[in-house]
Image (cartoon, rainbow, N blue to C red; front, side):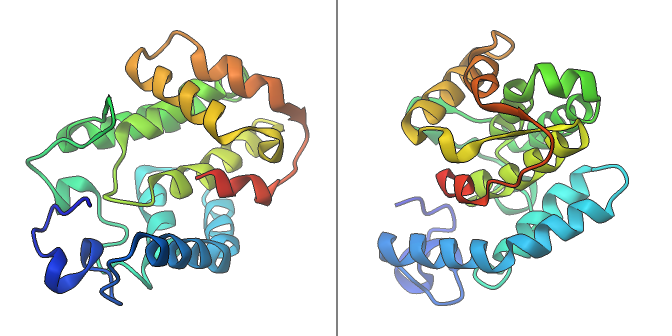
Length: 202
C-alpha cells in the first residue's frame, strides 16, 4: 500500500486520524465523508467568482479534513521530492502540480473552451494530481462547477467507470489528443444537473 511517510504500521494509511489500514475501511470512510461534505464543497465553489488553485485545495480540505490531517495540502507540501505513479500512469512532479491544475482552471473558465474540451480540462487536473489521495473526488465537483458556468453538464451517471478511467489514462499519457473529450462529450447535456450519483466513479 502507498506509504510515502514510511509509518503505515504505526499511523495507518497516510496518517489518517483513525489509523485505518484495511483498504475496505479506508474506501468506505472516504466515501462516507465525500457524501457528507459534497454540498459544502459545492457551496464553496459557487461562492467564488473565479476559481483558483486555492479553491481546488479548499475542496479537498472540505471533503477530507475529518480523516486526513494534511487535507488541503498539495504534494509540494506533503511529498515534495517524489513523483507519483499509478500503474503505467506517471503524474506530474510536485513542482509542476499547481501549474497543471491552474492551466486546467484557466481553460475551464473560458466557456467556449470548456464546452469543447471538458476532457482536456479533466486531464490536466488528473495529471496535476495534487494530493496523496482523494484527487478524483476533488476534481469532479470542480469540473461540475466549471461545466455549470459554461452552461452544460456531464451525465456522469451514464458513464462507465472502466471506460472513463481508460480514456483518462490515455489523456494523461498523450494530452491534447482529445481522448477524454471524445468520451465525455457523448454525455454532454444542456443546462445544469448535478448528477451526484455519478460522482461515485471517483
